[in-house]
Image 1: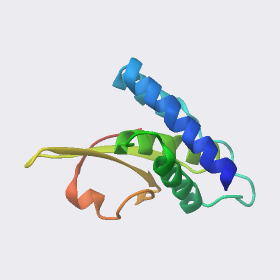
Image 2: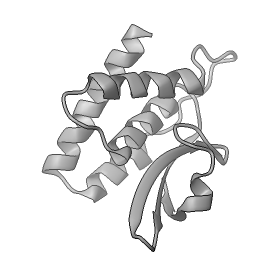
Image 3: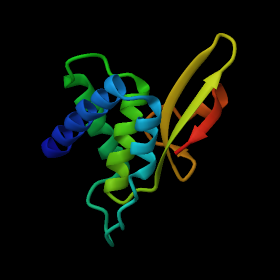
Image 4: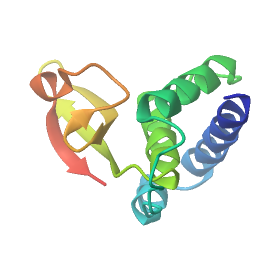
Length: 125
């Protein structure tokens, strides 16, 4: 688990770099181009364990981690371990808010299960 938290923390750092010095398109491309690795006959880590590791890495990160950074990292790590995860970006109109979360097979993996009731989906990658 420590190794997974460390990998999550380093990925948060890399995504922070991309968000600061590149544009949203670069981050989107990074997530979109991360292919799903073939799942082993028995997955060694559950999706919940991976999302929990990212959450722990967020606690130890040196600044506040926002939902886009957290969801991008979760999506990439899940795909690296054989999970067909999608990063979803949504918005609500009044008051205007945007949010990002991760879904696996249409089920929210790293956030509250009622995200689709609150936010209108803008895109999935």
